[in-house]
Length: 96
Image (tube, rainbow, N blue to C red; front, side, top):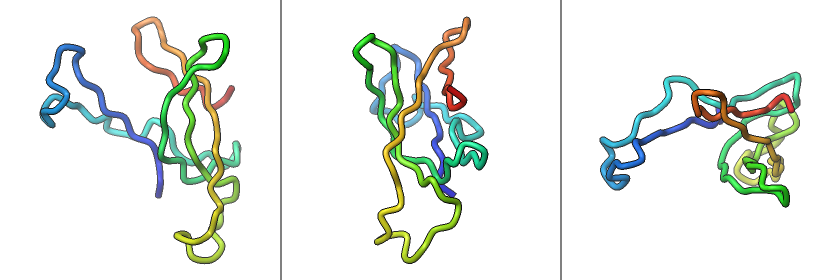
């Protein structure tokens, strides 16, 4: 099942060294049937005109995959606002 995980590294770490990275134990974004978001994946970050951080990713809006998933254009571009909590940890605002 597609989902979005997260890697973190210390700001002074050698980012080319695989040992510098820590992977979160659980996905940070996964399918949410109540939001019609299925199989999220391939993401990047950008900002809107007001400077708010957004995550752009792709997902299906239907639970079932019809046909061969490699040739079925059933993934759509989606946008999710991002924020940080008081500890500076990223918050994926899928409910916004």
